[in-house]
Image (cartoon, rainbow, N blue to C red; front, side, top):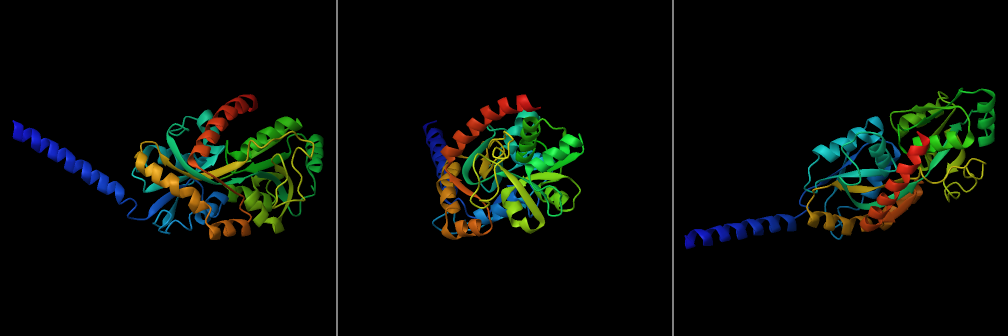
Length: 319
């Protein structure tokens, strides 16, 4: 009996040591990042830049690859991530706020702030109101005058339902009091295409994507509290006479599913902000008009909680 007890203790100790050794070796292979939008969009584009330095030994020590799972404004990918992705630290995901929080409030999703664990934030990308380069509208006032004279005729595209673009549209429509129609596209790239092709009157899109496509667009206003350094001559919507704040600013970063071992979360959270702050990475972000805002895990948790409360109230008044 005593021998069996000793054997059991030894077995438990050996198992514990094996587990600790496995965790100590993490990561020992490349790590994936699921992006819930298609290739070429702002989230995909920036995720590839933000993770460029991951292989450095002082950082994560393994390369990161991107797995795109687009659809339903991000819901396809995030539902998969929250319910099916591995919880061993080898599959991360890019988050977008307000997108995933707003969707979890409005729709029946597998994800919310309680089923996901943030690691760090790399950027904050405001929405901008854009029209095609050949559009007759040169200001927000021009667009709204046309909407006033032609109720229901103004169509505005965005990357999907209850993403930052849609929230900016809802605020814009309510604050302006005009009869406007939202056209949800299949992601930011498709939403931008609709504007460039003249298939919609205007669009809300990411500042980063719009700045890179400035030759094909006119950027009328920024949905933020202040003008942006990348577009110093473009007024805010508030400056243009429409009371739209910064609720649609798109925060982007990395997360893991709830249930991931805490030591893995701690390791990744300790390295992720340094990876985002890498000198070459920040240089690439700036050169591509990708607005950077690096935040730690604790700062992101606080931001998620604040956005959850704020968006619950905001969406109740906009829907």
